[in-house]
Length: 466
Picture 1 (cartoon, rainbow, N blue to C red):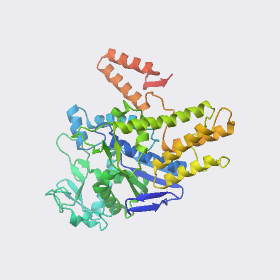
Picture 2: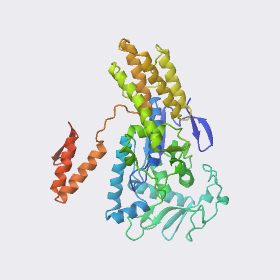
Picture 3: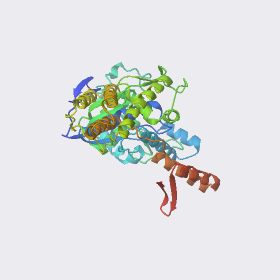
Picture 4: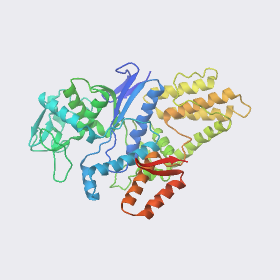
């Protein structure tokens, strides 16, 4: 039985889906004002393992992870760069996709907040009609005090929150606890037309609407970082349940923080690292391995020494995998199945049972990795060129099975990712528009050197690998 620590109840619970054999999961994605940092990478990897384990277990899972492509930081940085907020956000969505692909996350539904504004406006209308929200001078506020269960996720009591410290003071509010559903436009900012004037939605509302549109009024699992419990997820619950008259999510999962050399990560402390910066020294699979080395709810420390240790550990597994390939163990299964039986080889059946037990215990990836290392050990000691082909294949199949669930790709080569190729093509197109043909030719040659051939067609630039 799969057991999940549910933040909503504060205890571990046996997972029961809303609909037999199906899972609906929503995870808050990045705000795309810059490249993703190592803290952003943790939920990508954590919830990708959740995604993979449900698929492995035979569930039909719909996994949604949004892009927040409009907010104050995006607006400010776009203005400083002299580009539109749309172009600025799209640039960093491409950057996020490069890192997500590098971290070997499965494909998911990635809605953009700016493409769902119409639905957000309808949700605001509904909340106002039900008496949970009001408008003042073009701003629409939600009233948490109208929702009797406000605080059920975070454990925070409205009466215990001091105005001016935990909540924003605003003379337009009827209560200091009220939060924004719609804000009026400011000079030079992007905006959308609404019944309350030109403006844009509040951040909390964006996720409520996207979860509803792509998954329905009640979802199985809502995930994100611990920092999102309050106020973001608390406010999502309030506005969603008031609008829909149904529970918002049955299970809430939250990953812990990442510290840098045992200190909180922050730009002011100059210990802030993007995934791309780390990937220049350590391959993406090693970064993923490190992120799996701690149970997802616990804090994770990031340091040079720990990355070196992760590299060595990953290399041990990679060497075991390469040896299996040399012995002829080439698995052919694209997505493995939890029901695959290794009963003919008790040592494999035991390792698989340990692996599943670890992941069913609230996705305990450190113990799952231990099971994989144990498998690597017996692969190295029990197999030789004289071993039977069926035995070699069984060992390789289980190795591939466990690696797939953890998302560890031992075959990942140092090649350009698809999203990165598209970025290079865009740079080349911009160079051609600026009549910098020398730069355009240089980019084409750089891609060709890495086995990427560009073709200029009437439908645009296409590429193929050679």
